[in-house]
Length: 393
Image 1 (spheres, rainbow, N blue to C red):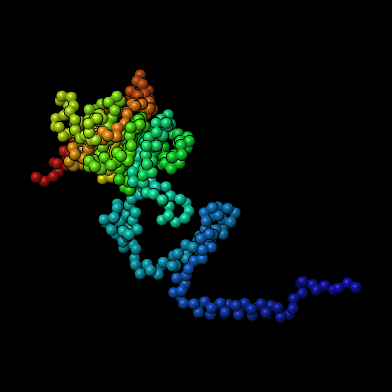
Image 2 (spheres, one colour):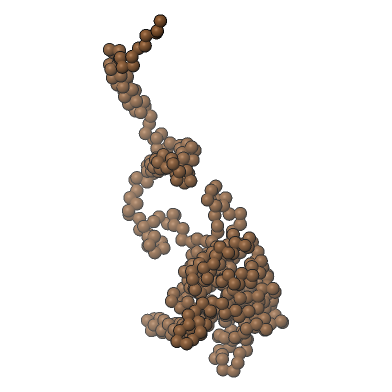
């Protein structure tokens, strides 16, 4: 005999009433349960660690992004509640600190980070555990891939105390990955730009503030006889804020001041051709280094950076004005003879110019260099004259 089945569509007569009563009791119970918790305990609520896992950025991009976004909103709301009680008695719109950096006057001084660095950080873990070492020096090369072996030799002369920054004027950055050190270097690329264009835009003094010394070097320098750590020791020993290694006599020389000497660790003056130096303490007989391989102390660079003109990209004339950033310049600027280099005079960036009016690309670049030198001198003369005219007697 078949067993009779009970239809699912048949309800007991008292079922609607039971649902109503159950709902009412639940609402009343929830109200009294919520009222029994003190308000303060909610504002000091501890967030479960699972909540942080739920807002993982990789997770938020998958098919559960809706859930993850909601968790993020819940987390933000909780943070807002946790901290709201401590700040609600203050009116943050009243904050105005004129001594803060320009544009940050509305921030409380305790939150301002006015300086940065080129230290590479992880995407995980605690920020305080990111860095196993904080480099003390920064070296910058403006490079084309054709000089890769030269740069590789130079970088191998550096210790782990150096951060490495490559400015690429030819757009070829990924090819440098053949060198292991390239993976810990910073790479910046813009086509056909000079190192002073890069320096003005990426080496602001507040960005390089952690570094004791900043090397801003060309790509065509032979470093077989150079040791960076020994160089730094000599710079400190002789109190040089602006310096460069001596140039081998066989390499391309323009000025006697930068020629390497065999009888001294460092020299700070020289004798030039007759009539070239009106004062023995002024360039090019003293207080002078060239712009191919300068090394700046942190304080000196802060001044020099502000002197670099935004539109004068070749830096010609800058070497004659460096003395304005240190005092006494003939003591603070010098050439390190005991650590010397070879200037190979490879016109790689010069060939990045454009042929015009029957002139080769390098000729157009050289003409621009000379024009910039004259423009820089004019601007400096006008600025100094305006300053002294405005000063009271």
